[in-house]
Image (cartoon, rainbow, N blue to C red; front, side):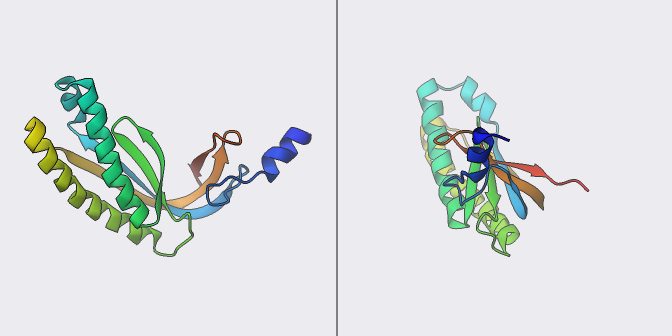
Length: 152
């Protein structure tokens, strides 16, 4: 209706060319969080918690990228990754493979954790494939992906 609307609609983000208007796609979402994370944070020093969480996200992020996924958001010890931004036909299989590799990477983290803190983590992973509306939200340098499940 005005210059702002024109700018918002015509401005594509660096996130795979996804528009702020949104587009319908079939995608796979993977959610993961650490089981027992709260008790770890309650019994650990803050710098240790930050370090371990960064190490965890480093390992898991590399797996997600390996399978052509993209981490949309982090929330505490959980994250949401999407597969299918590149519109591959195998995005569901990629997410499942990523889940298995994440479990393997967690074993590496657990060796590290056990040596330093006498503690091990388990992760919970949920995977869903569905039709979504995918878009971006935010302004120029602060864009995030967003998605909404399409209900019929």
